[in-house]
Length: 451
Ligand SMILES: Cc1ncc(COP(=O)(O)O)c(C=O)c1O
Image (cartoon, helix red, strand yellow):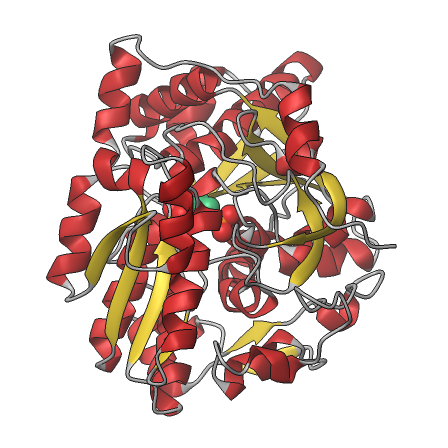
């Protein structure tokens, strides 16, 4: 009999996160001040983040211990199962062995609480009373609401308007955990007011919602800001995914040949990939693929240069693959992948040729999601379905070539709150978007020119 699930006991859960910063092939370019364009030190982040997270953002230590209180909350759902997708393999008639790391088993339903719990903990330790944040698909907002509820913090979530309308139950979930949820752009902040003055029907974007949440945090002394992706400390917390996966593969005496993750800001992809990037840098041969929508193609069609993380120029300038901070992607159903930029760490690895990136069209992604749901039972989040689509293509290549490769992907979340998008797909109402080159050029022309 072939085991489907490779489990770790709670006692086998990693006790430290892995920090890739000292191992990167080239150092990250420094963040720049949004107005002066001069390099800024970590102290510039003090108005929005507590000291412990700022230290992690720039740390040169390879491993950072996970606090006991954070481990205790992780144990509610971690270690997560590594599952062999036997049903999918059979359907594809592929010799490839396909595995998925199921992060959808957490209470909010995705990988996001891996960092939400850590961030809420460090903020509580620093005496912060409230956290403000943005959310795209609603997964990050619900993860932070869950974490704030656990550590007794208030939580305000600016939710991208298109998702607020498409996913009313994500909002209910945040309310259950006690958070306040505001559709973005909102009249509550200057950043929101400016956007609404230009376009009262704006669908919103992560870039706009980030501006609103940062403005809220900066204006209230008891409030800090929490980001669900992109930054180094967020990716650090997510490495628990890849560290567990390494132990799970060790148990069955296999090594992955291909790693796949969907990429919005880059946190679930990096969470799975970074511990393996260390192996690759040390000489192991493996492919690591980030998958994004063709409707928001920052890694595959963006440029590697300095840009703002938000629309209102409140964040420092980060060197990353970007489509330009004014880029407002179409309202595709993978709301969590509608971000104009990408994490500086992921961008650095792509620029250095250590990872690859591919773009997928929405309808093909939903076809793959359906195949997965009908062979493995789990209804994936539309974001995670991007990874599934790429895995299916790779497994089909293995079939053509007769190769028995081991493929693993991050199933970053379940799609139980995305059923309206499945309804649209089943009713043939979903469209594909390939962003026109001139629109991308237009958004990139607004970028500051920095040598
Ligand atoms: C289920 C799921 N997967 C992936 C993402 C993309 O984010 P990241 O690239 O940071 O993993 C999101 C973002 O909201 C998400 O909800």
